[in-house]
Every structure is written in structure tokens, then in C-alpha cells.
Image (cartoon, one colour):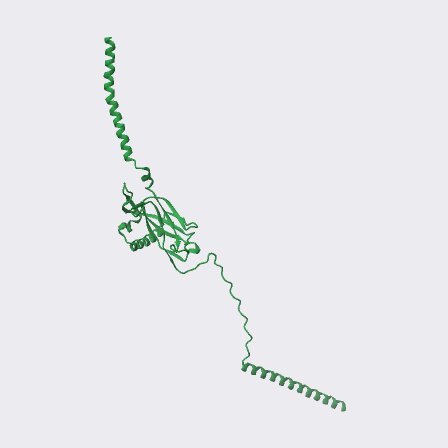
Length: 265
């Protein structure tokens, strides 16, 4: 009996030693799980770290007869990265990328005219150095979409125009991903290029017009001097013919007289 009590006491002692260690291990595991959950951002925030730009190219956008400019090619390149707020996703600061470091600006503080001027400078540089990363062509609705874009500022330029759209000029422009509208952060950005009409109309399939056939020139009347000269020439020829005829008759008569004289002798 005493042996049994001693055995039970030994088991209890061992359990007392194991339970604190088990509790400590479970506690550590719980803290690790909590830390992992806190460190992992929500799925919605993670998905929002990439954005898109949809170009909506329309002529006379605000009128009833607006025209979708289909078949034009647009190219984009990121010129600055963006630091985002971890909670709201809004842009805290822009950082000009190394490839465009010579054009560094306080991008968030520029006016519209300053942004337009910067876009033209950046476009000339990007075109010369072939820095445009991707391109797309507008569909029948005048739309082209670029996806999986990292946050930042993007330079957009129309690099080719369909023949029917060449009369519409479009300057390069800058777009931010994400953008803030009414306090809301939007990662799916729609860009609406501005166009101007240069007045040059190019038909889709130009056909040269046939050249008109030259009209025949009417007979020009002869000049009075040339008519007189012609009449005088005719008169001279007629007189010469008469003179030759008379001379021939005289010669014939002389020959006849000589022949008759010879016969009489």
C-alpha cells in the first residue's frame, strides 16, 4: 500500500514539473500567432499596393457628338516612386527614380502648368533614351489599360496616332497612382487626355485625284504681216511661172524659125 502511494506521489511530482513547461510553450505559441496576425496586413490592403491606369481618349468629351479616338498608341514609364501611409494608403511622399534624377521636383507641390512643362521635358528625355516601358493601343471605345502598376508618378505619351486621329494633338502628361478624390484613395486610375484640333484632315485612305486633261488650244489666227508675206510669195511664184511659160514659147518659136530657115537654104 505504501508502495502504491509512493508511485502516485512520483507521478504527481513529474506532472507538476511538466505542466509549467507546457504552459510556457503554449504561451509562447500564442504570442507568436498574435504577432504574426498583427504583422500580416489585411488582404484588401495588400491587393491595393498595385494599381492600374485606364486611358479614356475622347474628342469633344462633354458634347453629344463626342468621338472615341481608337487605334492610337500610348506608352508609359514610372518616373517617381511613392511612399504610402500604412493605414490609409494615401501618398506621403514621392521619390524621383534614378533614371530621371536630373528632373527631380517637389512633385506634390507643382501647379498644373508646371506639371505640363515637366511632362514635356520628361517626354523628350524618355523618347531620346528609349525609357518608355510598356505601350498599348486604344480599342474601339478609345480605351487602353495598364495594370499591375507600382505606386508612383507615371509619364504618359501618345507615341502613334491612327490616320483618322492625326488632326488631334495630345501633349504628354503625368498621372499619380494612387490618386486621391474627395478624400478617398483610388488605385484604379482613369486618365483623360486633353486634345486640340490642328485643322489637318487626313482621310483614312487618301486617293490622289486624276489630273485634268489639257484642253486643246484653238487655231490661232495668222498675223497680218504673215498673211501679207504669204500673198506676196504666191504672187512672185505666179509671175515666175508666167515668165517661164513666155520664155518657153519664145524659145520654141525661135527654134521653129531656125528650122524653117535651114530647110529653105
